[in-house]
Image (cartoon, rainbow, N blue to C red; front, side, top):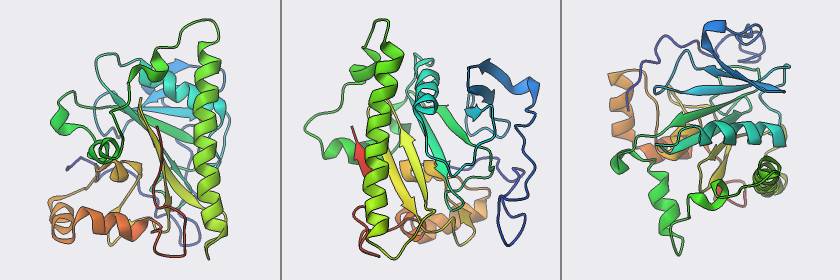
Length: 255
């Protein structure tokens, strides 16, 4: 996939910390990008969008991009995912300096997916292959009643923290130390965490979408590089392999 990312600001500001001295684009945010406001978040269109209707879920108060997601973060992400009735969506969070994030202000992202099955995230085929059946997309969206938001947000938070704890146990058992970076992805039927040990493979920067099988490149040259090296080699080069440092798992999945 080739996207117009060449003009997107990069994180290469200083050698000591890629994100430390960047200006905060969300303080204040561009009013022309405003979509909706919540108690603790604002929803903004992504100026450097991957696809149309690519939105950002941004904390109103400054928080670090290395912070854990909380119940309100996940509830707001889910709300955005549920607004696209005619298409599936994928939400993601690039957590930490090695995750492919370009901004230090905590923000999550939600993008609609093409309705054509051919263009669904390749990771879906792997996940569904190892299940007895394809998950029901209405598993959560079918909940109704006064406590719908609380029920869903609690469910999402419990599963997310379970993945984080499993990953943290692996880090503690390895030579890696906190603070750690990871990619978090969530669809209507699954969520996944991938621990990171590097931000780039060669010149290819990898964020959460790379682990859904949707790697972003900036040019034909980068596309040819990925074709020659292979997508899996690129992903292995930036993720923590279970065969290295005795990490429990490379990818943790909850459905």
